[in-house]
Amino acid sequence: MLALSHYNSSSSPLLPALWNNSGGKVEARLAVEGWSKQGNFTFVEPTTSGVIVVILSMTLGIVSNIVALFILVNAYSLQRRRSKATFLLFATSLVITDFVGHLVPGALVLRLYLSGGASPEDLDSSNGMCQFLGGSMVFFGLCPLFMGCAMAAERCLGVTRPLLHSSLVTKTRVKVCLAAVWLAALGVALLPCFQLGSYTFQDPGTWCFINVLSDTEAVDVAFVALFSGLGLTSLAVALVCNTISGVTLVMARLRRQPGSHHSTKSHDIEMVVQLVGIMVTSCICWSPLLIFGLMSVIHSYTQTIGDNLLNYKTLLVMGVRLATWNQILDPWVYILLRRTVLRKIYLIAKCQAGLRGTKLGRWDPTSYHSSEKREVDHV
Image 1: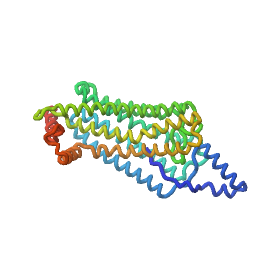
Image 2 (image 1 turned 90 degrees about the vertical axis):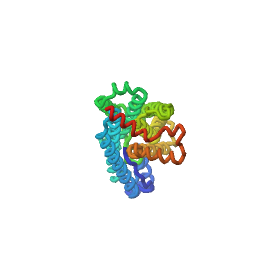
Image 3 (image 1 turned 45 degrees about the vertical axis):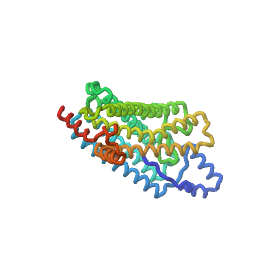
Image 4 (image 1 turned 135 degrees about the vertical axis):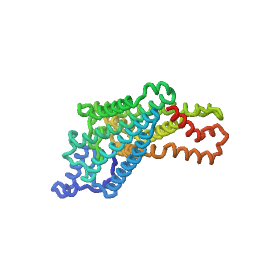
């Protein structure tokens, strides 16, 4: 989504001019406090190391998404199974969304960072760049969560009800589902345009997000509750669906008798493992921001933040930084949790643990090839 930067809070480019005024220290302190109340942050000077961190983070995210996109597009072009093809269509769309969501807001944050952050005249909530950046963060935040939920539901149906899945899930319907996901996320992101919530500059003035700390109103609480509620619900649904899919696959493997020609499809295992990886990554990266944002806006609206304002600012910045890593780590799920990599991990684990002859030994990688061959012949 974006890369937040490190600042040197000990200096500010605005302070020297203030200290030279005839009012002296008192005027300087009052001016800084006044600006701080307007935007709820202090003006600080960026450091060179912070710029390097931002650039490296953006580069890592862009490279990771491009590599994952190449792998997924290549797999999609060679895929003959419809169930796998629909999953790859979802996955490719997710990586593209992550790529754009890392590039666009990240470029805006870098621009603000290099310019020294927002100036006092930019603190107006109608600032165009702030509105676009805040909306981008909400849109590119909800899209991956919605897509992860839709992918988990699709795989759960494919694993537990394969016949129903084959009759209901088509490439056309997947594309309609993707369009609905993008439109739903866009609809939420555009709510401030109808005075249903607002976006404001956040401490230290290099990024914009939903107003959760300063002069919050009932509509701000409702907006944050909607954003966090949708995100947490998506994670919960994905958790339930992936758990059902995983348990179903494990039980099917354990029930299989030795020498039986019926085996769980290897591509189902691969897809569920990847979905679990996406779900775990999303939960770790997004839950803090969704929870911290909701806590902050509730306490701000009830005027109970008080002396804990700095703590809430810190928690919010930490939450956004973690959310940023989601778009960097998601591509590595597809890069590292492919079937070839999983097969090597399984063989190493089997040799180390001596699983041959046990029930877990039925997870024989040779069945991957046989099940795939039978499916291709059937097609």
